Length: 466
Image (cartoon, rainbow, N blue to C red; front, side):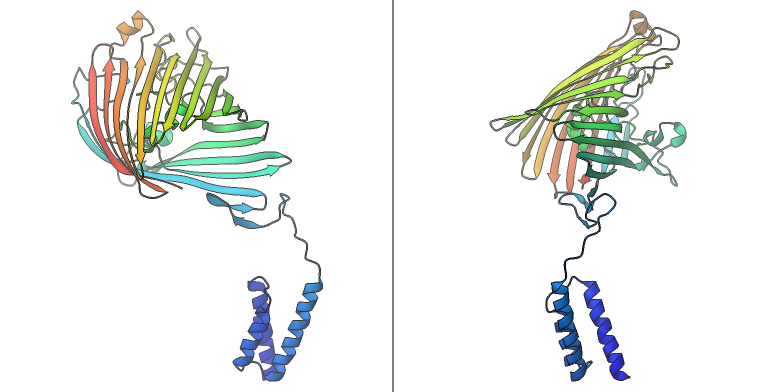
């Protein structure tokens, strides 16, 4: 009986060894020898099991390799880590995760409110000093992407969630980007900015369908140094999900928009993107019932001339607005820019011109109350020098808005004429994930009637990417 129990225990140990790890030459023989040495197996039991193990090994070696059952996608049915990023390879499907978290202490000091500091559409703070711990121009984000190749096509599903660290006031409207609500027992906002699919292949390009960043002015914000920091704070007393960065002081915010966009393959560094977009109604103009989509396009060139790297772009947008009580109008705009890198220095310059698009956000202050278009234009210049882990940068930009008519000027004397800002920034790369940042920002808003507001802000914090 004891011998039988010992044999059963040894057999169980052998089965465990066989299933817990890949089979390796000598592993089972070593285990039997160790059991014999410890007295668990008698001499006879050891010889009996050793003979059986030798015969089984010979039979396994002579047998053909077992077939691998493919999974539903036609892949090999295995799981492994991706070669780069944070993710998994599951059969033929790659599942990747990427994200960012940031936070800054921001102190903003604005002018005291008065009749001469009122600027409708101004971005400079009015109301004295304030302090906040808040997100910068970016909220946090978590992006999940599933991609694979099927029938010769590279396809992907993309989801991007952008949570802020500050509490928001949903009752005030604006969803996750509403005005802040710095009180106990509140919740932060989650801005689900990205939900789109892609399909494409070599020689064809790529089609994108869903919600993602627009084409017009996208390069301006993606190359802005304040994208990683604060820039103009805006609403620092009750911070919402984000600051303004350089939005409204150099470019109009591109926004995340429903679209169907096609991007060509690269031809010697040139790529083109064209898209049909959900029409956007005016934020401040008369009521609209829009019936036609918007259209956007972007052309980019990436290249090197010796040791000098360049990225050049031009983009445009157009959309017809069907006004309920008034004349229809077509809003349009274009922008152009260049990014030049030589050694440790990167310089960026951008310019935009528009009519019926407004300022700061798409279709904000774009027309007067009757639907007459206002023209706008702006630019920014920026430089960033990197020495090891340290970077030092600065930029200046402005956005200008014109009246539509003389009647518009008489009816809206405090309408913003120009928003501008100076930015100075210092960065330190703590490691490949975390960057520490310090920043000083001077913002100024000027009205057409001469009113003026200025504010000064300092920001210090960190941003993490993975």
